[in-house]
Length: 226
Image (cartoon, rainbow, N blue to C red):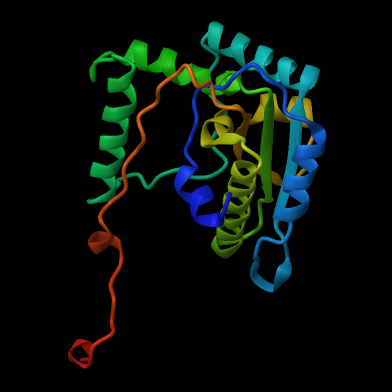
């Protein structure tokens, strides 16, 4: 699989097959992903890979919290601006409409939306999960480094025939994750990532992208200069 195919075939899969992912494949992916760029090569990511009984225990703990309506943990970072301006709010709304519309969930059915969202904390049935932490005293540039690292991981997973789903949702259950992975003090859980083979029996709509004219500007003519 070439890099173009890896990029265009990568998507957030929310239905995984019950097929294990080998430790060898995960190690190969993460060894290569370590070459992702970071400013001054500080490599600010701290990664925990969870499979087998530890992952089953984490899913169980999260499920128990959901069942009793336990409140989400206090956020350690702001996932979205308090007031998401245009065009970002429209893009987010379009995603939600597509996602829940494909599940047959009406816009105003908040209970059904919450049930669908709860699949996050079962890793959508995936047999492997990655949890990515960053030191709490790092700044915005280091958070962007972590994003480049995670994208590298996801593209390498595609090269192995695997799919993934990055999930900030796990940042709402930081205490539950910490109980299982025991991170050192001072680390912030940025996200989880479900990893596995896509369940081909489940058809998931592909989320579109904005036209390049909305996000890219070319300056290649003398008339463009001011």
